[in-house]
Image (cartoon, rainbow, N blue to C red; front, side, top):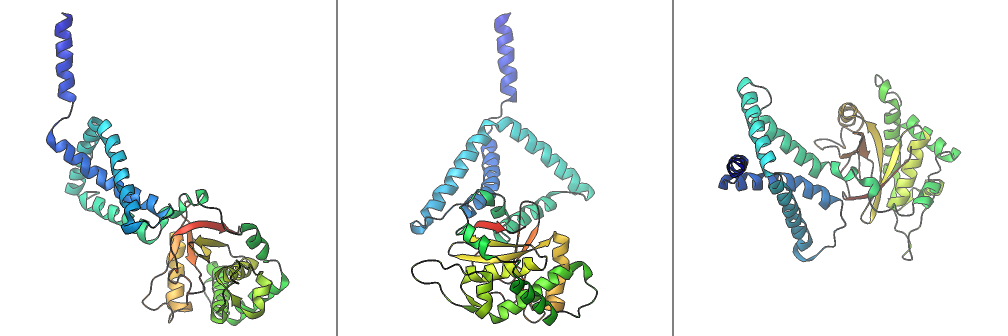
Length: 310
């Protein structure tokens, strides 16, 4: 009796085990679909050693595939059951016109585009990356309570966009854009001494509107914060640039309209806005010295750290 039960148990177990050849194909396809976005996140948040022919990135991608493949094969039966159930749901959704195969394809493409173009995954673990260079010196140099900084910001808001009506909800952002316009119109790039970084204070840069990228970022952050805006500085490889907090994606749509149709129509004509989205879903717009309008192209996109000035 015991042997019969053991045989029957083994037979039932074999029925539930999935060992057909097409299973390996399904597992591998699922592996690739998962590995690609995982690779993008890891790639964007690791220092690139610049190996010959990017061999390090090839090895990284293969390693990710191997790890995911091991996990998927270990959970093979459960995963295949979930896939079958998911396919049945998608077939039903496609039939009645709700969420179906086309929706899945569009969502996957949107996710891949957002990860590669808007650098969304970089902000997910941004606090765990490399320390921000010269952090204490930069914070001390952002003299947003200095009367000279405040007075300059007020002058800029009186000079640009002062008579704009009907956008009271975005008054502070518009005034910050006025400061951006005044600074970037007058900024003269001057390199630091060869011996090392020279961190100029905001009031010092205000004298001649000259300096390198960190001097520009310090002045921009100080002036924006002096009139109620929320700036942050982004550190990339060999570059620092400022960003301003816009708010939600709904706010971005309205700010996008303002920039392209009201405030910087000529400068932004037929161009797109460049921004980042942090882990809380907040939108930060680029204000680099190389930009002729808020949200101009990034000079360098690979984020290594961020310094937010709340």
